Image 1 (cartoon, helix red, strand yellow):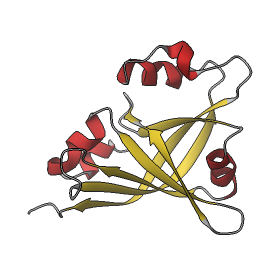
Image 2 (cartoon, rainbow, N blue to C red; image 1 turned 90 degrees about the vertical axis):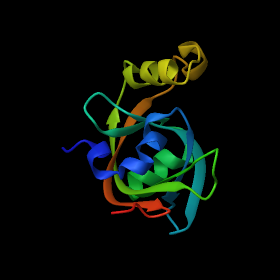
Image 3 (tube, rainbow, N blue to C red; image 1 turned 90 degrees about the horizontal axis):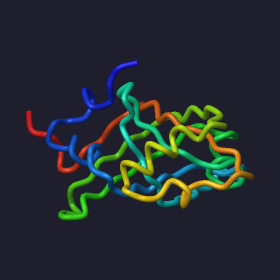
Length: 138
């Protein structure tokens, strides 16, 4: 799998590298969009990832339809955005290894992000189309 940073214009790579919040839009069983705020990171393998629990609507939506959209707005300039239209791959994360990476990236206590009863999944966003705004010059 190619590194997502190679597919994102240099002008917008910082939006993937900074600990920001994105909007994840999924499609529910009735075909309706559902959006939620999520954290994300580019993992050591170069893939864009998230972490979710199986009790959340976004998990159920992605199980039924893996097509999704991750939308990031630059907090310093709301007209500069990065959209990653993707297919999500869900992988069980019983050791909560991805959560540990998120805790470090977002400077929070890992215990705040997990509970013993939850079933965690790592989401790998497989980009289908990447849209930057304003469009990259070139």
